[in-house]
Length: 383
Image (cartoon, rainbow, N blue to C red):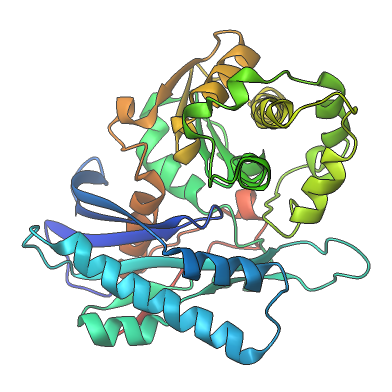
């Protein structure tokens, strides 16, 4: 297959990710060298730019069904596009480098790879972003809509990052690569074994909801609130009775399953003496146990190291619970120890997926997503 560009020594791309936590957009600019080994990444610049409160609330309203009109959805996409444009310009200040492509995930407002129930049969994934307008206004080609090609091939459109983990972390095998965003997802790598990857359960999604609902803060900074709470083991058992945790990969999930209703129904099961701090502590333990169960159950070779990234790594109490769940094996480190920024790993991943698209290379792993075949990911919008 011919690449979309003429081969050359390196390419500079910017990647952008706005995840399930919906707290803003992470931008990176990276230089990807096409040498042996086939992929070498030099991190040039990163920016985390938070959504304004009004936009974040609009997105929550759209996702939770409080906005129903076509105009609401259109307005949300245009405002997200405005924010991507403006945040990229902010990211570029002082960098003095214009990337050749922007690889932009967009904001997920719907992800339902399997019907949730008999009354919710719609299968699909939807990331809002007007890539064509973004390309025109920034005068840079934009690669977007990464998930739809995999879905069209029968896959779940997620997770896509295991392909990148395979490229970046295979030399560390056997290892696990964990990202803790709104949802926690795992990639399991071992020599001479197929790469395994899946969403293992909630990451920050329940923690953030409880922090906002009971403490009026967007998240539990450093896990300090949870650290004063008590874990209720019976509530872990109750949560993990959900069929999602028993489902075999391929599997991915989002707010459609771990919704406000799901969380409230779970909280209603707590005994009367449980405090709001106990809710947080138990939610952190749920995330830790889901991660541990995923690694233990699906590792072909038990990993020597677990490399962690994402916003959840800043929650010290959560990281302590994960470490306790594994009892010191494997060694848990941030992805920085393997040369990949833990803060910006997901944005780096989409820059890499964008690079694969420019080279006309496949970007999915069918065994991970459930697709019938490898496919090229992303549409390219020219200025």
